[in-house]
Image 1 (cartoon, one colour):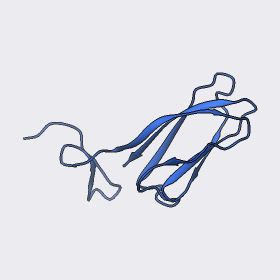
Image 2 (cartoon, one colour):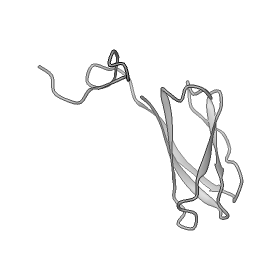
Image 3 (tube, one colour):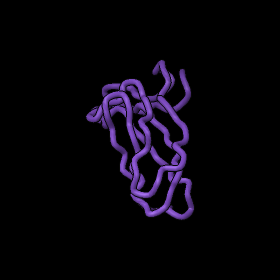
Image 4 (cartoon, helix red, strand yellow):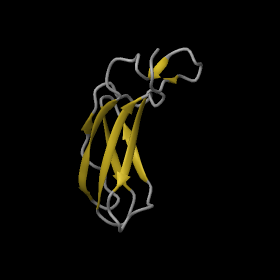
Length: 101
């Protein structure tokens, strides 16, 4: 008998998170500081990331600047990296988390 949480894919055929899955689900995290208003950050390298694998690798971005909270950001996915475009009218910093699901 095992205890814990198990999360399966949409078809219910593959466990994607749980005690039977080996490997890390958090692929990267960090802070991107001082992205100017309406500017794009430098690229952040994430192994395995592509512009099309949104169904298996997710990127969460949290704006840490109180002057621009609630302003949407744009996550630009590429091959092995991503950038963040600050769509606000103020310089902002962002915390990011990249995870496999």
